[in-house]
Image (cartoon, rainbow, N blue to C red; front, side, top):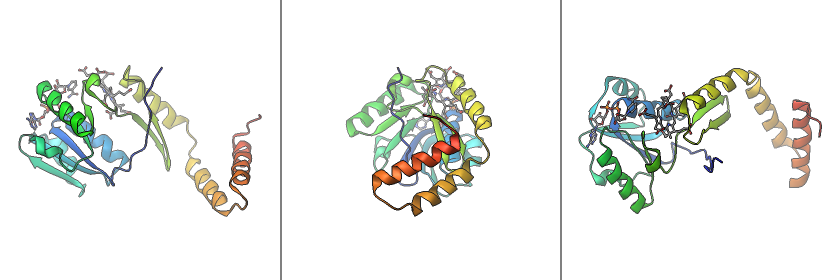
Length: 192
Ligand SMILES: C[C@@]1(CC(=O)O)C2=NC(=C\c3[nH]c(c(CCC(=O)O)c3CC(=O)O)Cc3[nH]c(c(CC(=O)O)c3CCC(=O)O)/C=C3\N/C(=C\2)[C@@H](CCC(=O)O)[C@]3(C)CC(=O)O)/[C@H]1CCC(=O)O
Ligand SMILES: NC(=O)c1ccc[n+]([C@@H]2O[C@H](COP(=O)([O-])OP(=O)(O)OC[C@H]3O[C@@H](n4cnc5c(N)ncnc54)[C@H](O)[C@@H]3O)[C@@H](O)[C@H]2O)c1
C-alpha cells in the first residue's frame, strides 16, 4: 500500500530552498517552475550549471546564491530540496530540518525524504499527481504521458461550465451537492 498523502501546495505563498545547482538541482527547479511559475525559490550552490542559470533568468521569484551552503540558509524557508553531490551534507541538512520541523526532500535518497515529487498531469485547471511509492519514477512518467493523451481536450471547458453552475446553484449544501452529482453523472454517462 502507498501510504503517502498527496497535497497541492501554493508555491508562491511559501518559500522553498534548493541546495545544489547542478543537474539534479536544475531538474527539481524545472519541475517546480513548470507547475508553479511564481514559486518563491532560493537556490544555494557553490557553482551553477548552465541549464539552471538559463532557466532561472526568466523567473523573477527565483534567487540564486553562489556560495557553499550554511545552516542559517534554512532560516525563513518552509521546505528544502537537497541536490548536491555530498551525501554527508544531505544527512546533516536532513537532521537539522527534522529538528526545525521543516519538510525535506533529498535527491536519490528516499529514506531521507519527508516527501517525494510526483509526476504531474495538467489539463488546464485539472491537475493529477502520480506517485509509485518511490518504486518506479519511470512508470510515473509513462503514466503521466498516457493520461495527458487520454484526457479530453474539452476538460477546461467542462470545468469552467461546472464552476458557473456551482456559483449559480441555490439551496442548502446538501441540495447543491446532489445537483452537482446529478449533472456530473450525466456528463460521464455513469449509471449508479
Ligand atoms: C516523478 C519524478 C518527479 C520529479 O523529480 O520531477 C520523480 N522522478 C522522476 C524521474 C526520474 N528519476 C529517476 C529516473 C531514472 C530512471 C529510474 O530510476 O526510474 C527518472 C526517469 C526519467 O528521468 O526518465 C532517477 C531516480 N529517482 C529517484 C531515485 C532514487 C531511488 O529510487 O532510490 C532515482 C535513481 C537514481 C540513481 O540511479 O542513482 C527517486 C525519486 N524520484 C521521484 C520522482 C520520487 C518518487 C516518485 C514516485 O513515487 O514514483 C523519488 C523517490 C524522490 C524524489 O526525487 O522526489 C520524475 C518524473 C517526472 C515526469 O517526467 O513526469
Ligand atoms: N544527474 C543525474 O541525473 C543523477 C542521476 C542519479 C544520481 N545522481 C546523483 O545526484 C547527485 C547530484 O548529481 P548532479 O548531477 O546534480 O551533480 P552536479 O555535480 O551536477 O551538481 C552538484 C551541485 O552541488 C553543488 N554543491 C556541492 N557541494 C555544495 C555545498 N557544500 N554547498 C552548496 N552547493 C554545493 C555543486 O556546486 C554543484 O552545483 C550526485 O550524488 C549524483 O551521483 C545524479
